[in-house]
Amino acid sequence: MSNPMHGLPFLPGTSFTNSTKTAFHRSQTLGYRNGYAIARRPTVGIGGDRLPVNQLSQAELDELANMAPILTYGPPRQAPPADFIPAHVAFDKKVLKFDAYFQEDVPMSTEEHYRIRQVNIYYYLEDDSMSVIEPVVENSGIPQGKLIKRQRLAKNDQGDHYHWKDLNRGINITIYGKTFRIVECDRFTQEFLESQGIELNPPEKMALDPYTELRKQPLRKYVTPSDFDQLKQFLTFDKQVLRFYAIWDDTDSMFGECRNYIIHYYLMDDTVDIREVHERNDGRDPFPLLMNRQRMPKVLVENAKDFPQCVLEISDQEVLEWYTAKDFIVGKPLTILGRTFFIYDCDPFTRRYYKEKFGISDLPRVDVSKKEPPPIKQELPPYNGYGLVEDSAQNCFALVPKAPKKDVMKMLMNDNKVLRYLAALESPIPEDKDRRFVFSYFLATDMISIFEPPVRNSGIIGGKYLGKTKVVKPHSSVENPIYYGPSDFFIGAVIEVFGHRFVILDTDDYVLKYMESNASQYSPEALLSIQKHIQKRGAPTAELEKYV
Image 1 (cartoon, rainbow, N blue to C red):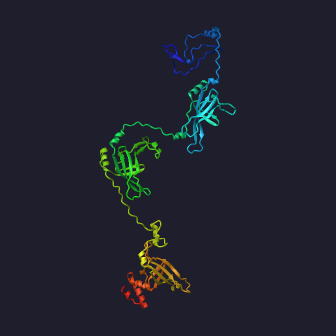
Image 2 (image 1 turned 90 degrees about the vertical axis):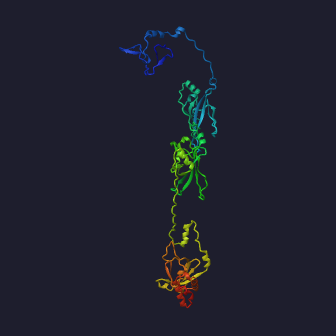
Image 3 (image 1 turned 135 degrees about the vertical axis):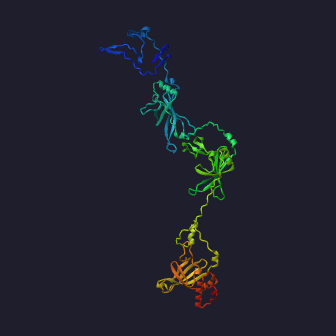
């Protein structure tokens, strides 16, 4: 309801609506008095507005009600009937267009499970036919275009067909086993359906294919240039480089070491590169750079932790702060790409630059040399008792053991020279007192073999008692064994072989000649025993007397 304002004519455009009004009921005009229904004249109109005083009375209203226009002017003339227009002429080239989509399963792909395909549904009003067309997407790899040609589409099994009354926004329709979701229509379709009394549902957003959205390239972002003049920085600091000497101490990890590097900071564009310092015969491939020249981020934004840095380069949007020249100070550690470098020195140009730019004049060199650890004494493991000690020790010197070196000159000079002795076995057993053994000492290899001559009817099988081997003296250590030598064999000497004690009783003539030619190797006791043995035989002892 509109209220006329004072001083304004009651014409369209000169009345204003009271926005605070909330009651719009009509006043009651029928009442009862003494049980009789009477009509009363309303004083207020709809919404409680006061009616004007000069309104018609009830008699005047009844008189006006009896005055019909047909009585005054006569019966009205009937309008001529409209010309008949067939549907194919009235609705020619009038098509309803709906935007829809359907979901298609993708069973043979590991990257996408389903696919969203957008289509346009056209309804032709002239013959109630429909068609479904999918817009062609370039390089999609899917046959697209006309999915369903123009025809009347069955609605159900009873023979009904789809009509424009069945189409609306926000509904699903099934055509030939595929379910299409209608989300929007064009303006002509909306006006036509509303003119026919159909209330349209609110529009929906078109569903997007997740795999297609994933493959879309990011939009190019244009960044407004800042007030900082990079060209001025390039022209001012061109060919000016700060050089720092640093080390990376990785000795705490397995097989780690302390390596030297040179860090270059380019003032022209605030980039950094790290070069390796190679030494001769250091056993490393000659790669000149550990890190190529690039800007190094110092502080990243919080959501940049999941940024694929191994694939994409970090831009300014992912970095809060970059490394600058003031971050490189001699005597302080610096972490770059997960490695902590300790800067211990810089070149003279860098010292002058820090003095002029930052006022830092004291940048002394830090001594990072380390004392070499004392050499570890290699100790052989305990002897296991198998073979000779020299043979067993070769397993500790190399993965593939080699035979110990032999004294070739000694073997050539003493080849086929054997010293033989006759010995008896010291044993408390009576049967062992009469047993005799022949000791053979081989001068070429310092090995000993023992042979027991067989004795008939003795009950003891003779033959080889001990093969050729080196015999260790008793009371000698296992790590430094002392073997029996030629000087240990003389008449009356006791030889202990692996827990058995033998007493030398006699020698052959070759032993006497050998002792005569090498008397300096024997002790006076050994020479005296041989002299007494020769005297018993009655042989001359002039040559042995001079060594006693």
